[in-house]
Length: 172
Image (cartoon, rainbow, N blue to C red; front, side, top):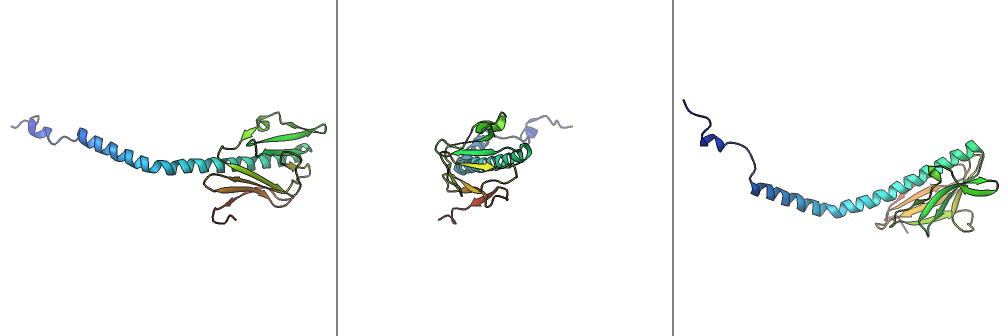
C-alpha cells in the first residue's frame, strides 16, 4: 500500500506563487492607470447630464405646481454665480419655496450656462410658469469642458421642456 501524503502529492496541489501574484497585480495596475483618464471624463459628463435632468425635473415641477396652486412660479438661473432655484409669487413678490425644491442648487464647477429667452431679463435670467399651464419659451444650455452641450428647451409656451443633446460637431 502506498501513502498519499508523501512529497509526490504536494506538487499537484493548486496555488499561486508570490511572483505570479505580483505579476497579476502589476498588470491590473497598468490597466487601471490606462483607463483612469477616460473614467474621469465619463464622470464629468455624467455630472453635466445629471444637472440637465435635474433642471428638467424642476421645470416640470414648477409647471405642475403653478397650475395646481394658480400661482406664478419661476426657475431662476444665475450663470455668474453658477446657481439655480425655484421661487413662487406671494403677495406680489417672488419668494423661495418652503420645501427642498426651494433651496439653491449649484451647477458643476466646469459647466458654463447660457439662457436664451424671448423676453429680456432685468437682472437674473428666469423662466416663468403661469397658472394656465403655459410657460416662457426658453433655451438653457449647459456646456462642459469636453464641449458636450445639453439644451433644456421649450420652443413655445404650450410645450413642455425637454433635453436636447448638442454634439460638438454640430456646434457653430
